[in-house]
Image 1: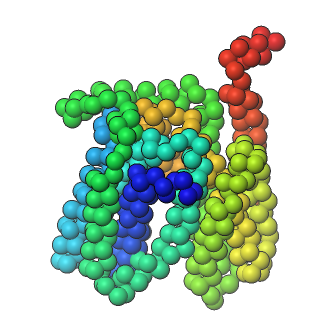
Image 2 (image 1 turned 60 degrees about the vertical axis):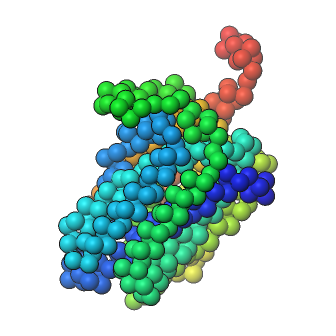
Image 3 (image 1 turned 180 degrees about the horizontal axis):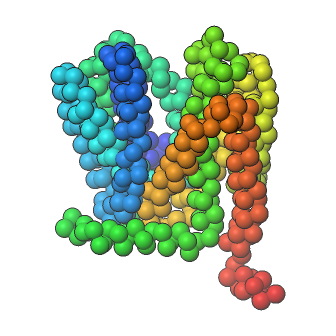
Length: 423
């Protein structure tokens, strides 16, 4: 990791990502507290705000990757930050006058613009560091996610408590400006910024965009290993969807009905600590055992831990197992996150990366819909844990049967591969 931070381009990219993520977390959490506080008689508003954060992923996923691959990725990241800063000024104005409908419109637009940031940032990262550094870079990103998981809610609450909704949103906007300035001063290689050459904005027509989107789909289908890996993200979406409500339901309806607020928040803390520990040890594990066994063993282990979670009736045991699950899941995430830049060409990384989120959102939405319909009428808390375990074990089995032969085939020299096929 020391070598990564000796790279000034990576340093600016890393801190720009921190600033952008900080703004998103603080602003979203502070606004949620504001809605619950200001409109306590209308709890549906907080749920509507969450919808405004998630819906744009399904609205713009087909275009964001195409834009990241056709135009200057540094400029995309800069404008993504600065446009969100400008929208935050409008959000401040609408909050001041209690124009909630327009606040939701701005939240939707901010979330939509943020979707352009991810593929552009991934492309810049891929082109700015060596292939042997992808695992460490993915590990650092996982550590960041763990830190925001641990302190994101607290940061939003502290900003809202001490600065008010106005001060929290100002801090939100400033973080986007800082992130944009770091990208402006970053010296990114030209092959990372514009791997497909310069394109003009007037070339951004629907037939061209749709053709590029289909090209990204065909690229994934042609690369079997990539297709197998990405097909699993729907299962990760199911896991994220169920786990979004599972800690609250587990504490409220089974483990600690009287103290469910405290203990359900502790689940997030323990999971974040687990992710942090797992992120620190993951690079060494991957270096020693390679990604495939880490990925497969990790999924099967998480499946077993979910069965234990569904079977336990003690809060301390539940929290301990959640901590263990976080430790195991972090290497799984880092294996996947560091594998993608190796498998995908720089000319297509934006399109491929942009297709991952809708896959996860599809699983996420389906899982939440199932939970809303089935719990508690058809399935109990333990059943939700077991259902999730079955999904993860199915994914582990899919990877177990599919990945090893594809990895071996990829590692074969061309001549050996032809001999193997002939035999």
